[in-house]
Amino acid sequence: MKKTNIFKTLVVVLAIAVGLTFTQCGVSDRDVERYAKQLNETMKCPVKVDYMTMLDSIYAMPGKELHYHYTIVDHTCKDMNSLVSKAEFERNIRISILALVNAENKDASSFRRLKIIIVSEYYDKNGELYSTVRVGPKEYE
Image (cartoon, rainbow, N blue to C red):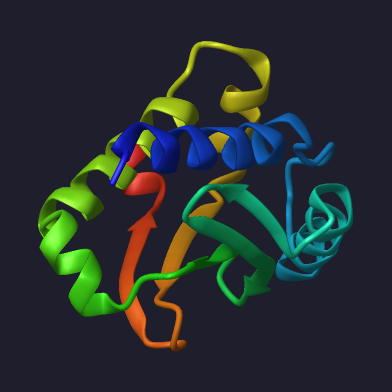
């Protein structure tokens, strides 16, 4: 498995999310729902983001959470475990998310100020949950 492709994909998706930040400071769950809808339309979800990952949808959950639902195409959870340890996979995804959110630019600063929680969920080709990586304000402040 090419780890760089997965991380590159995550970086692209999150860069779009950061780039389309909210314009108001008092963001509500409803604002996050609208934002998720806008991201789905902008990204034209579902969209294949690399040779093994499909971004199926982005959706909002209460508590200012943005969930990114990915499918690892052509692989089962068992396949993934033979390619990379789950701990390493999650650690690398978390590092990528944090690097984006902590970037020194206006968009990343706005994202931090809004305290959005990012949840990346990865499912295998059979729809079984492989991994969930959650990054919140306590981690990126």
